[in-house]
View 1 (tube, rainbow, N blue to C red):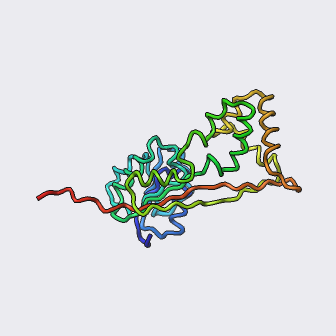
View 2: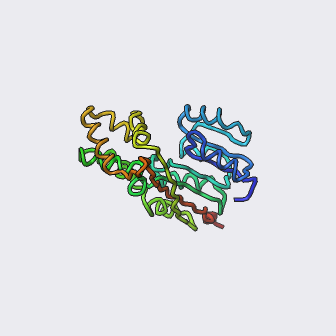
View 3: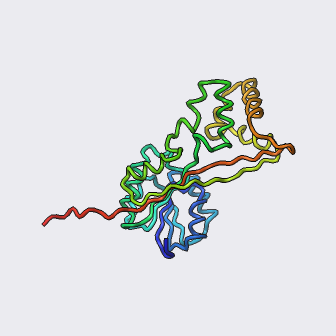
Length: 239
């Protein structure tokens, strides 16, 4: 994408992707939408670049922006949207011909090792936990699924790429402590269990997870990134 472009970040959250665009893409402006006022307040406080314009809105509100964007992107969001294909179509409507549409999601079903060990252990302890597993809840988050959504939405030149990141923990307790927060799907599920069942899940996770001789844990987590282009619109005018 050339410098000076207009970008839209759908579901910007705390502004991580917006910040990356500002640092790396030299845009003219970035309009960042999110339905959460709390996230927007945080993003505005942490990103003061005048090119960033944070607004409250959903994936469908891109249609109300009144512009022709050069790129519309979304990070770790589309699996939470009720209609991912509809969100992509809305993005395409406000993007110039041959403009960029891009998104990425975690591979919860297979390669998100940070959570995979937890859910496999939780389901072993209680098969009913399977319905809480993001790998089950979010079929979009698997190889080929996001690419298929882009193609169904009518985007052209669609390309999918795996992005692997590595998390390292000094010991098992450093890995386990975030699961005690009660926030998000896995910690929320764990919080519903009795102390005895929580201890059993912890024991099962600890037995599964690869722990090095020095006690450290290194896990690889995969995301799927997909980009496509807005195809030329058909001329609907008739003589």
